[in-house]
Length: 117
Image (cartoon, rainbow, N blue to C red; front, top):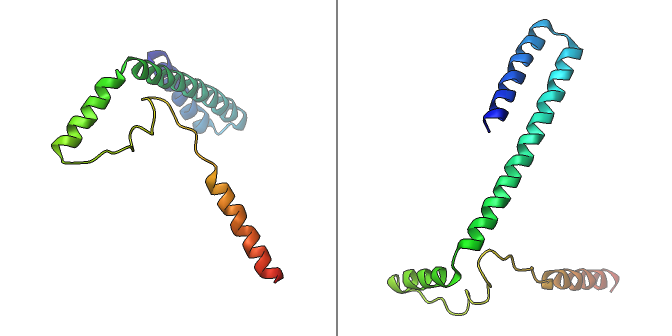
């Protein structure tokens, strides 16, 4: 991360020099360099986020999380019911159901029939 900070510092200094001279080619080259370094930083940040998420999701004990949720619910007199059991394991994203699409098509067909009728 220190390398990226130093690189960005150099680009900013170069931008100051380029803007002072108002040389379009120099400004364009500096901006291209800045864009490349920014993209590199974005890729590194995305990789770190993904690695951290994978690590914490893999090391989080599911049964302890469930016990904690139940304990908090009991302390606050909340009923969890089946809402949490339907969600699946921690760290897994459930696929959305496609019922909304069918409703939208039925609605469009009803409107079309209404216009024709």
